[in-house]
Image 1 (spheres, rainbow, N blue to C red):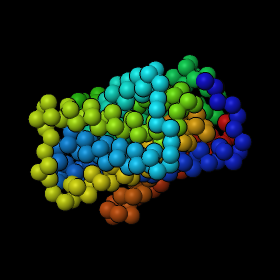
Image 2: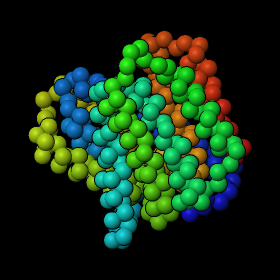
Image 3: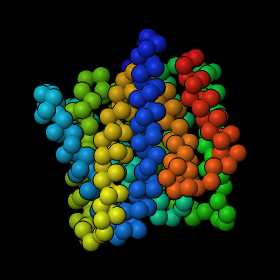
Image 4: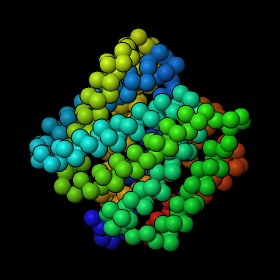
Length: 293
């Protein structure tokens, strides 16, 4: 499916929505760490996150009077993407947070725009242009500068988990782009979050890792993950993908490390170095280069 050239206003809307989604996702690593520190397990955190998100999306479906019925083929593909791509992505990433710094896990995750761009070229017939290639280079270099290199050796298990998340996330975004031409975004999100919640919930019960023995701080963090990092982020991202395509959305989403650094500076009082500012400028240059594509 090749997305034709959209009017400038629609492209601008798509960019704003993807940037908003990225800002919402920038709280993910911090919220996950807070949930773990408060006593919540990885699987408990993910189960409650997606149960909350699914409840919100189904309320939106009912309130909006959407036609929620899917064909067997659509339901099969949504299930495959939900279990085989989205569930594996969040499991791999949230496990990676346990072994390496969250910032480094996110950096490795951001190999996925390159994978998306290549998959979109072959499967969605999205053009592979020089501006898009330059934007990929700028945004990745910017991410590397912003996040920096940690002292000491990285745990390779965390690195491999993050890279696995990058691959499955790319498959999810490209597969979702193909489906959205025939499914309303809110309905798709309702099915997606429900299937992920059921899958992760069942896995947590089978492994005996579901426990509600966590504090209020962890509960608040799970609430942020469910509402901000899932409901708002998914709704904005997938609506933006409809306007600008998978590869451009993936490249623009590399703004996340910039947003993470700024949030750390504002909320946690973490230092914002000149190098981080330069990296942020590189990412922004890559993002806005998309408007020339």
